Image (tube, rainbow, N blue to C red; front, side, top):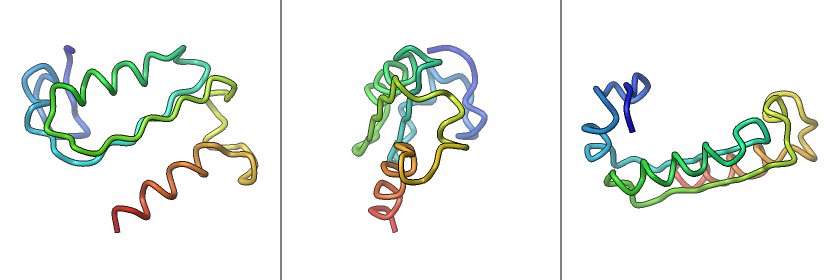
Length: 87
């Protein structure tokens, strides 16, 4: 991986992933064609992350996490339990 991880406050991802040890949630939609999940798994392999959740939702539009009705919003149905476990 190359580039920066500004959200993590880290330098280049290739040298900083090994310092990350927080749980990870990754959600991929149709727009990413599986790349978000693949990238997240690669990042976890190079990190100290012990808990990771990967949700591939290839039928979802990239806007569905924001605008889909809650009853059919896969993002909400999966991220809420993930966050509740981390209270």
